[in-house]
Picture 1 (cartoon, rainbow, N blue to C red):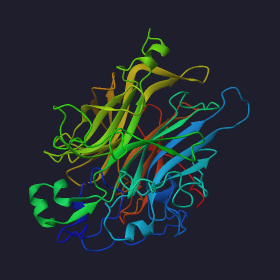
Picture 2 (cartoon, one colour; picture 1 turned 90 degrees about the vertical axis):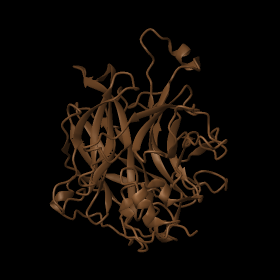
Picture 3 (cartoon, rainbow, N blue to C red; picture 1 turned 90 degrees about the horizontal axis):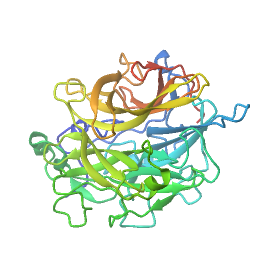
Picture 4 (tube, rainbow, N blue to C red; picture 1 turned 180 degrees about the vertical axis):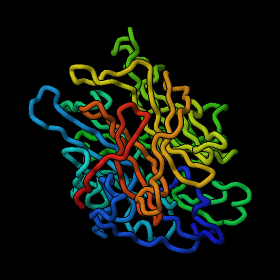
Length: 454
C-alpha cells in the first residue's frame, strides 16, 4: 500500500465536518503553499484578527485554526492590566508538502500569541525551550516513538481549573487538552461510505486515527505531557471493540474511528456540596469532555462525551450531539465550545446562571457542504437540545469566511457582551481567525477588528 496517493477522487470526500480548514486539492495534486499578507485585503476582512505568518519558515506559515483565548484582569486594580492569551494550532508549508501523507488539516503544532485588547495580537516568537521548532509552545512528540502525537497535533482546550476563568492566581497550573496523530497508516476507505470507498481503493493515510492527550504548564508557554492510561500515552482513544488495548468504555458505546478536538468543562460544585467532598469523590464527574468523532458503522460525524473525577482519566458516556437529517448539521457535527450562561450585575460582575449551559458547535449542511456555527442548550451537561444557527458563513465569494465558519470559542467582556473567536475559510482555501459579538448568546454580529502583527 502507498500512503495517501488519493487516486481518482476529490479530497472533499474526506470528512468535511471534522476535517476542514485546509485547501481541498484534487487527488494526486499537491496543495499549494499560501503566504498571506497581514494587510487588509478587502472590506470583507474587517473582523479578521489573526492570519498565518508571512514568514515561510514559521511553524504557522500555511494554515491556522482552533483559537482558544483566555482573558485575565485583576478586579482589585484601578489600572487597565487586562491581558489576553491565545493558543492555536497551525501547520507549516514543509509539513503540508513533505510527502502529502497527512490528513488535509490545519493541525501541526500549537502556538501562542498575546494581546492587550483581544483584537491586535502578537505572536510568541520564542516558544517553549524544548519544542521541536522555534515559536512553538507544544510541538511534536520526539521523545516517544510509540506516542499517539508524533506526526501532527491540534488544540482542544486550555483550562486553569483551580481559579476563576477571568482571574489568574499566582501558582496556578494550566491544563491543555489536545489531539494528535501518529505515522500509523489506516485505509482511507474506512472513513467513507461504500460508493466513495470504491474510488480510493487500497490507498492509505497517516495520522487519521486521532487520540486525545493532556499537558500541563505553569506559565502557559512550556508544557509537559501527561501520560494517559492508553499504551500510546493518550487519555482518550477511539473505542474499538476488537482492540484489547482500548480503554474500557462498556459494551454499549458505539465504535469510533477517531477522537479529536476535546472541549473540557469544569463541573461546578453543586449547591449544598462542599468543595472538599467534591474534590475527593472519585465517582463525581468534575470534568466533562466533549470530543469530535466518526462512528464506525454509520460514518456519522458526531460529538461524544466523557467524564472524569480528576481531569486526566476519562470514561466515555455516549454521544451528546448527532446530525439531524435535512438540517444545517445534517452532514455532520464537530468542534464545540461549552460555556455557562451568565449576566452582568449592577456592580459590573458576571453572575453565573444555575444549571444553564450553551454549546456552540460546527455543523455541516448536506445541501451546500458549508460549515456553520450552531448552538444547543443543556441544564445538566448531559442532555442537549438544539436551538439552531448562530453564525453563518460569510456572504459572497469575496468574503474571507465564505466557505465556512467553525471552531468557536466564546469569552465574556466587561461591557456585558460576549466575544466569539472562530476559524473561517475562504473560497481559495485560506484560513484565518475572526471575531463576532453578542449580548444574548443568540444574535451574533461580526465585530470590527484589527489584524495582528506577524
